[in-house]
Length: 84
Length: 367
Image (cartoon, rainbow over all chains, first blue to last red; front, side, top):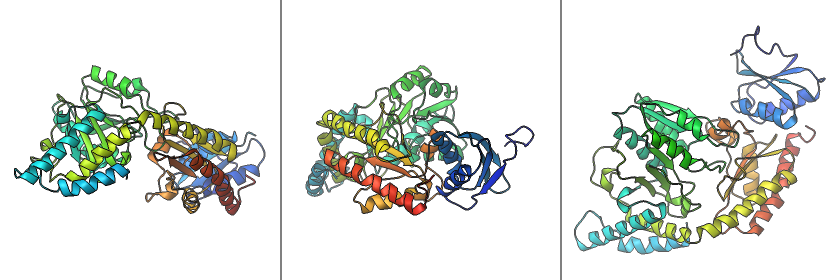
């Protein structure tokens, strides 16, 4: 759990992938990241357990920065910064 | 089932049907067959015959091995050490131990799914009654540093249980175990036969109600024909095991090298070198694991998957999770004995089209 004061901060844009099963949250994330400028912090909100593994793994494969995860009222918010 | 197992089972149904605990002629013959099977399995796993008992499955062997070894050392304490990537049978036994008031330390693994021996040993405490480490991982094929871990745990006086289900009949077994478990269907034996080996001198107390069968460790009338068939099959695969292992290992190497060339955005997981000879696992980005298994099945290839969408639980495999690797679009290929280079080439020829078709349907080719 990360509080906003010490955490990675609020995302610039958020993708809602609640209720979607793998690999849909990662696909939604990839689409959103492709559409934003470099430096943008993108959040993907997901309640699928696999997202906890697949979002960081996607960042590694695509050379994007995995910033971390924060608990959300529903599911978790995974944060990714577009670096390339 | 191995042809030798099938043939032996047929014959043993006639010769070994009787109760080996009885003294009449057919009973004595069943006893002889059972003891012969025990001797031949003992020789392959490197144990004395009286250290071996037969269980009703590999899972039961793991349950009994974990809980029995813990019970045997309950005066020392109730702490259990396991790796994070053990087979579910070991992890479920660990959970049962926790429900009974015991404690469990779970040792993490690296990206290849391998425990670090020193980190493993560091999890051992003064009240540790048992440590468990698989010989090799069942999902990604990574071989664990069992002998190093065994030396370090032995120095603390803690017995090591080795779940060797993946290794018996496929590769040489590590030394240093106090308890070893295995499963006959993995070596081409019939379903319903497991092996539990407990080294002489290892404290063991059956977690089950008392029964005179199998040294008091496994209750009930032994399935003699199945055990005899399992032992015959193990002898058959152990003979020539090294040659078959190196042949299959070269085929796995081919899959490991070719798949990333043939299919874009694939992560081959597990240790590339310290691995089982017959197992290879990879994950395909943006692909639904269940659809991938179904389409490969239609193309004539029976594969497994650790993706959550293919499991009843909706959680990804605990092994992939502990390794921190991509979990969706996961495919596990296990090469049966006798797999030919042509079989592997046919798989490599079919895979790119199957993955591309699924990505096209999902509309993710541009991502």
